[in-house]
Length: 197
Image 1 (cartoon, rainbow, N blue to C red):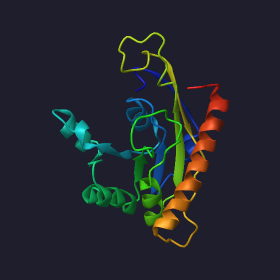
Image 2: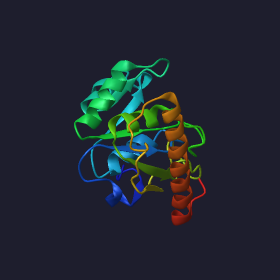
Image 3: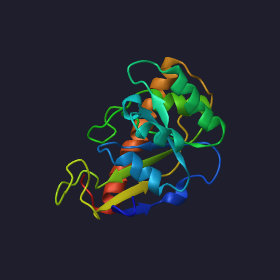
Image 4: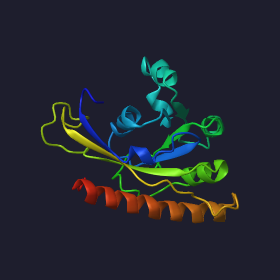
């Protein structure tokens, strides 16, 4: 990432130095995951769609600890592996919107709340800004080479109310709380960096 682009990392000290943590990342471009993996202060294990695990990418992604998930069903194997990462005190990376979109946290799925409430791990919001810039691209699927991409880490917070309830109502309430925190962080990151995209 540092060879291809010019990442500017802000607030990485907010990621707890040890123990389980979930990084909740906005997702508007293919480079967002690799950018975070390359700039985070700790190794990150992402839930990645199974379609990405093809050809030589399959052993590579597995080798760097990424987790394959079937997005068409409740993938119990992927859920178990993700909880295992947190149970071992590791860092789980999640795109809470489930897929690439506007990257504005507008439509969160319940998966992030489930992992946070079930594991008790704090959530650190992360905004990746500048990856959608279109000017000067040599390769349409990537931001312009050597362009600046901002990675902004926010304050860690707890998703649940402390009771550890995992009912549908509790997860829905946690998802609403999480969405408010993530949206607030994204707005603050845009102000801090002067970015609109």
